Amino acid sequence: MPATKDSVTELDRRFLAAAVRLGASRLGMTWPNPSVGCLIVKDGIVVSQGITGDGGRPHGERLALDRAGAAARGATAYVSLEPCNHHGKTPPCTEALIASGIAKVVIALGDTDPRVCGSGINRLQENGITVVVEHDKAIRQAALKAHRGHLMRIAQGRPFVTLKMALSADSGIGVEGQGQVAITSEASNRMPHGVRSRFDAIGIGSGTLRADDPLLTVRRPGLSHRSPVAVLFGGSGFDATKLVNTRPAEELIHLPGHDLQAGLQTLGEHGLTSLLVEGGARLAKAFLEAHLVDELILLKGEPVLGSKAIRPFPSDPFDDLKAADLDGWKVTARRRIGPDRLMRLAPPTNP
Image (cartoon, rainbow, N blue to C red; front, top):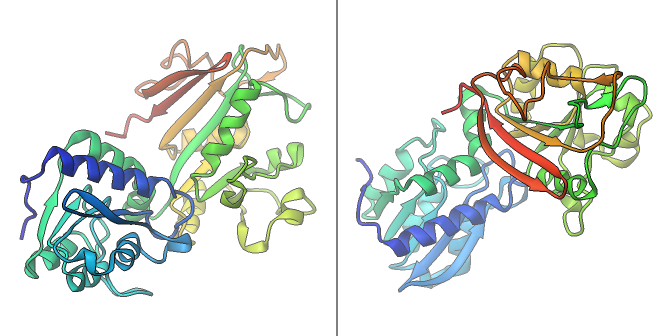
């Protein structure tokens, strides 16, 4: 039974957009489940809200319904992703919605998980609940972005991969034999911590581990608890590093060998849905050549590193994507962060 495609007001869209933003606020905290936002609205007033809890439970819909109580009867639920319809460690959200007396459910995005994939919508409709899947482009794009890790893991069995690199004015990311080199401004240096907080895992190569001995934490007030799982690609292990001394073993994953695809599948099996790669030039090049980068974030600072600079691209990507071997990549955002420049790109294979 197809969901209704109309009967959505401007107010409905505003509540649905808010539900999507709500879910996105806890990205990095809910794996292996998607971070779903849910609003319960009655007579134009929000009576409750819920976001998927740490580790994926409780689900956003169930939390919102529990908070609403009797006020959910006859109300509308706005959810960022189609409600689940299968028994896992908790009963399906469709059961909770039906039992609550909800009259209408407005959904931003259908779930491609084979255990759901339309069955959640059908079950709600079969029990007399009006279901609408909104087709507003802006809301759909926001929901796709919020749930891209979940969708990637379902489609390809691996997390969504974002590669982040800081480039000097002469397109270097470091200098041979010098370890970590300051490239970007203090304003830009604060930005990665906010980015890290929205990822399930952060990955580096063995060269970066040896040269920098990084913590890979989120060092921003109020966000330290959102440090992602640390992943090491290649090498012999974490050895006697800061990561071993500051992280519990379950937050450290070592992927030996050179098969990145197999390594990403392993991360998918762990339930990880998003990976931020912050490795050096060698790991970055390997991911790019394997066509395993789903988003590229480039920061360009003012320092000049000179003739011994390590350059991941043959030319400056900020000037010419084609000359930088990024032909076909699409710039999705550009902005300034203090004196530095930021550019986000999507690969040619992405819609």
